[in-house]
Image (cartoon, rainbow, N blue to C red; front, side):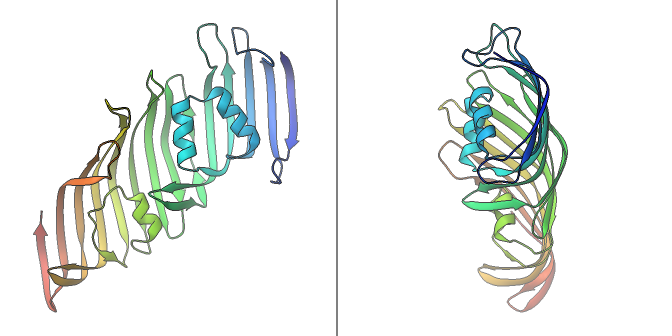
Length: 274
């Protein structure tokens, strides 16, 4: 076993700028984590995809959560203060504490999404984690995230959360990837707002994930071809979506209200469809 007494070091990995690591406690070296093993671990400006994080994740993170992060190719930098405790009746140590991302990027629906600024805290507990409110800011867009994930006994990840946000530049590829709906079949050049979008990802009987989403998207200066050309439209879209394992997110409840716009060159207001 290895013992650390307020050990601190700057570690440079993979050619990155150095990150500070602070460690106190006892950890196993050539055996599994067990009763009596406990570490306090501090990470400062650490890269998500560093060799150290990959090693720690493979030892301490459940396979389902680790697979979700790897498949989304999550990258970025973060601070963390963690408590790692072993026990005689658990295969992996218990990890609790806080993670504070600075910046992150990930792949959603084949689109790389980058948040250049992140303010908020992820709190880890015995069964999962919680995000009270996290503000993420990208290129012309922002979002406030709140939610929780829990780890099922099988290692599956169950996620529930809400998103509020806005885009100054309309429906850019990043914003389109972030919105959990394919129903906004408009070319939107004006601002977009997402109002209380609710997300849920859970396991299914076949083992794959089931995705569900609902909420409202408010838009301006939209253009679409819906039998006739609609232009300069503003309004909002209410939607509900769901996907089964192996299928794309499909919309089964859609309501569109256009406050104003033009159709075939004729000005209109207060149009609605479902």
